[in-house]
Image (cartoon, rainbow, N blue to C red; front, top):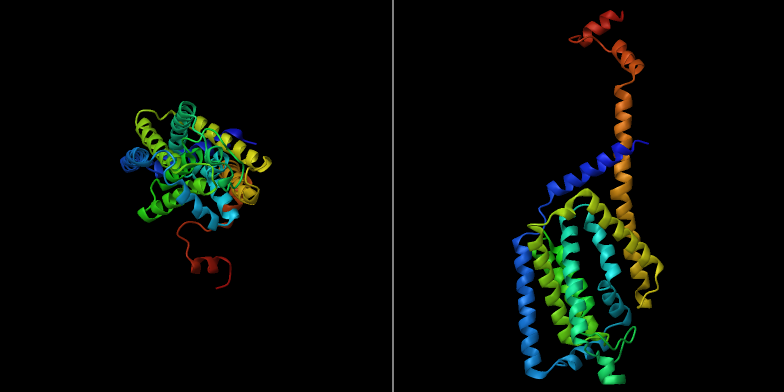
Amino acid sequence: MNRHLYWRNLHRGHQQSLSETAGPGPVDQNLNLVLAGLCALAALILVTADGYRIGFEAVHSVGRYVPAVLLETLSKFGETLAAICLIALLAKRQPRVLWMGVLASAYATTLTHVLKSLCDTARPPAVLGDWVAVTGPVLKLHSFPSGHTVTVFLLAACFSVGAPRSIRFLFYTLAAAVGASRVWVGVHWPIDVIVGIGVAGLSVGLAVRTMKSANCGLGLAPHLFFVSLIAVCAVWELMKSSEYPLARLFGIAIAVPSLFVLARDYLFRPLMRRQAGICSVSISTDPSRDSALLSSSEPPGTDGATSLVRKGHV
C-alpha cells in the first residue's frame, strides 16, 4: 500500500475544495451581527416592559397542540452532538465553513457558559411548578440563555453560507422553530431563546472576522483533526442514551449518514484514486504490453485500404 500516494490524494482533494469554495464573507458577518443587535434590543425592550417571564404562558400553551414526537425531534436539532454530526455533510465540500463553525462554537460556548454562570436563572418548572407541561427531562437551573437555540442557529449559519436567499430563510425558520420548541417543552423562557439567537449571531460574526487574520484551521492537519472529532461525536451519538426517547431514531438517522459521508470522503475516495493511479502507472510501465501494442498497431499514416492490401484481401 502506497501511503504517500493516499496522503497526496487527500491533500489534493483538500486543496481543490479550498479553491472551489469562497467561504463566509461580509454578507454572513453583517447578517449575523445585525441579528445579534436586534435580539439584544428586543430582549432589553421586553424585559423592561414586563419582566423576565414575559410571553411564556402564551408561547408555552402553543406546545400543547404540537405532537410530542415533533417537539422532541425539534429539540434534537439543538443538541450539540446532533449538530456536530450534521456538520459532517459540509466538512469536505466547504472546509472554510467547518473552520468558521469551530471558531463560532468556541466563542458561543464561552459566552453561553459565562452568562449561565453569572445569571444562574431558574427555569420555568422551578418557578411555576406543576403548571408547566414539561416534555423530556425536567430542568430547573441555568436557564439563561438557551444553549439549544445557540447551537441550532450556529448550525443554520453554517448551512447558509453561499446558499440562495430562499434557502437561508428556510434554515433560519427551522432554527427559530427549534428555539420556540424550548419554550413549548417548558424548559426555557422566551427571553432565553431571544438571547440565545443573539449569542449565536455575535459568535458567527466574530468568527468570520477572526478568519480574516487566522487561517491556521484551514490546513490539512487541523482539518483532519476536526473531522476526527466529528466522527467521534457521531459514534458517541449512536451509543449514548437520548434525553428525548421519541427522537432516538432521529439521532441514529443523523449519526449513520454522517459516518458514511466521512468514510466516503476521507477514506474510500482517496483510496480509489490511489488504486486508479497505481493501475494507470502499471499499464504505462509494462514493456511487454507496450511492445504488443506497437506490433499490432499500424504505422503512422497507414489507411484502411493499405491495411487490406497488406493482409492479402485485395
